[in-house]
Image (cartoon, rainbow, N blue to C red; front, side):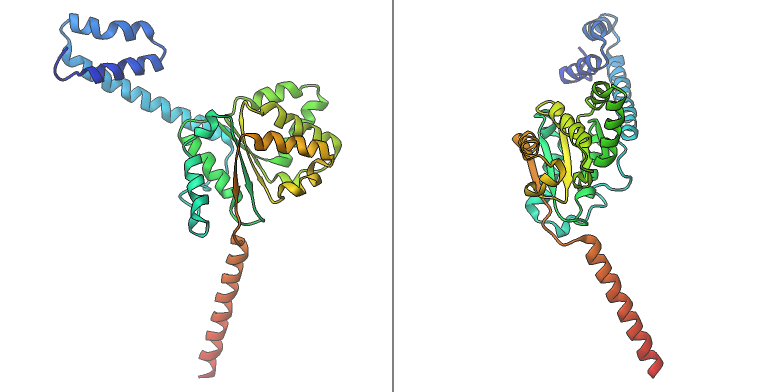
Length: 267
């Protein structure tokens, strides 16, 4: 083997060819090139394979981004985390590694309206998609209605299988789900189907003690919470509302501007 083509480079070439599902090429290419005296060509071939891997990653991320339906612009780059407690920010960054998906763990985000739950969930989704993980972001009420239609068409199992392809299902604002028995049933069925198999991220304005407003029946409420909490990370957004603070700042600036105009007029 040539000095320019190292054993580590050979391992990398084998890894890439395995990724591309080319086992015969992987087992033969280095031996054949070496036998033909094409030492220098191996380094060039590895460069081409790296370019192919990079291109495939980009195409995959593009496909995953389209399928994820994440709110555009709501990423960690635009997320104002300075107002959040440091432990919460650290939890979000750790979740962005995607390790919790391998454990089929859930993420539960609690807090009042306007505290950044949805932005944090979307930012996490964007980060995971960028790492090649499959994500679907959907308002809970919308998904429940889609599952209801599937149930009425006797195709609920098929609809659940389609959702099963996603490593992470982000249900935004579970507290806004309507409370008919059929809606409660399909939501609980979804949670039961994904339990210990696929991860869910749920944002809620309601703490667990108020979830009987969603599921009505105490036993169903307890069963739903039990499945979600069993393997979970709980994020508490215990901060003032971003929107309320922005409105106060805007109102203060307008008052200051008016006072400035009055002072100028009185001179």
